[in-house]
Length: 213
Image 1 (tube, one colour):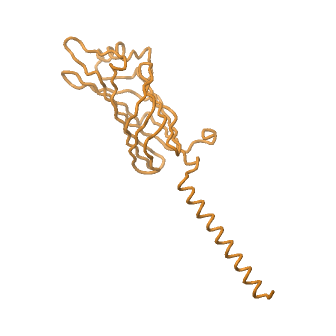
Image 2: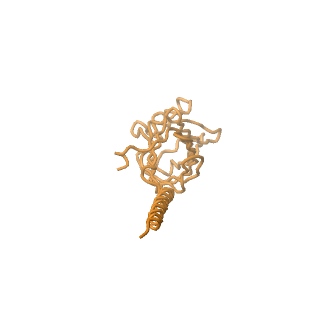
Image 3: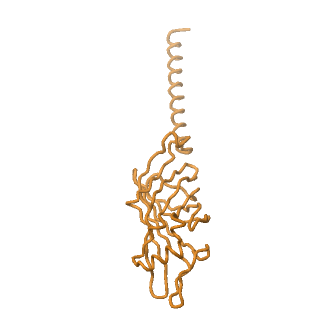
């Protein structure tokens, strides 16, 4: 075998090796895009100072607006759309700005001394959440109020920018149907449903190695 032939064979092997490495690299990139790894799972922390929980209930005279305070909240989202964690609100913080009305709400409707927390434990999303920008999804999970879990699905508008996120959620609670007392009197009729608006915000992070195992 001549030197020129051996040189050609060596050059061909080198070229084939380079093509193989390029193919493997390209395949790895495509697989990473199509099948994201567990490292791309994300954690969403809720910041109580940036999160508001508002409620609205109508009566025959006017609309009553009030607020609750967030206790804490943290969610984990994996690439399949499964969600874990919870959002916990202090039921005793409910405030409409009217002391007499608030005492009646806490004593007769929420019974907040007995049931001091309102919580939502999501378990899955319907629809993808973009790694950046806006997404519209449905959030399914268990909503606990007055000591009872209720299965709900609520629409959410989510926006992610770098390591910060926001979400807006609106839903209706048929509190009377769910076993809570309607505070209506002979002269004042109050709606048997209450509108809830959650404006959440906080930080986005990758979960720790221990939490992803």
